[in-house]
Length: 439
Image 1: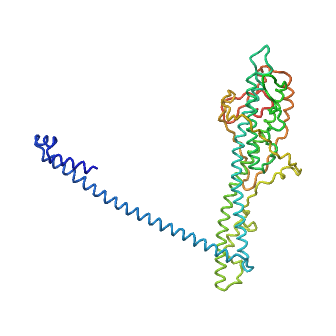
Image 2: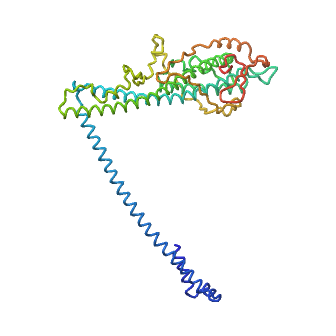
Image 3: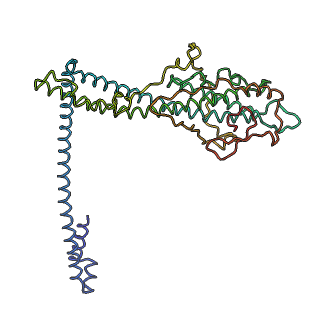
């Protein structure tokens, strides 16, 4: 401690020591001694003052702990009293009284708002999960489309002949197949989390996809690999548009659910206050002996009429949340068999691949994201489903064109189409008439 140091300095000056001897020889022993004693006295006073302050802080802390315990007991007592009060009120108004019809109406309205808000919060969480999965699926689908486009329009180095398919093309196709299964896994997650999503059968990239069953090895290569790759390209191009539509619908419904939660919270709070006011009025009337007092004089009528559409001064409809309709509502009146709604099975023995960083084709947009613009619609009503793209009219044309030759010839500048992907400054060159990114 600082006081002990000053005490040792004073002790050395008073007794025989090198410092005392030096001070004596210099003739300043008394002056140095006075300074050391003054420092010691100041250090001692500071120490005593710090001890007193520490004791005061300990006392304040103990008082605060005792006050906290007292407040905790008061809080628990208040909660118990509040619970007993609410239980007593519920017992009093357990049965309806025909003399007071307003109270059961407000109670039923409050229960309706609370239930709707619970459903809206539940659906909002489901929409958020589906939105994350669809956004990831959309990015992966775009990457696979660009990968397949590169494979189809690949120009080999062997100008005068070579194998039917290049080794790099095979590696790209294997990567694309594994990524397609990952895309389907995410789509299955969306259809499981949000079974009410419109046209769920369009969120399928593996059914009737001939590329999935095609095998590549050193002994056998399917001669129709380019036609099957083009057919897979068309399936993914159609699925890309449908995923865009589904993502837009999910985001719009999520925004609608968020707005409904806010409106329902406001309505529930107003109704809760109206119900409390009405119950106080009823109890005052009963205690005063005016049982037959008409309920039309209720002070809560003005608040209750806040969302009354019959009011001449207020045209706001009562807040309501409409959950997404069932799948059958989107089938245009036609019954869909259960087999069509079955989720495609995902193989368990797939080699996982988490990204495309190994491939040069993906270096320009590995971090790109897609955010479809939301239409400026009324968020107080649920959004309508977007009509899906069922068939791709360019698939057959692409298949016929690509099966004509084993390897494509280099294209000139006159038949080259340039399309720029979202959120990237690099130009993506595509020669496929089926490419969904072509402008």
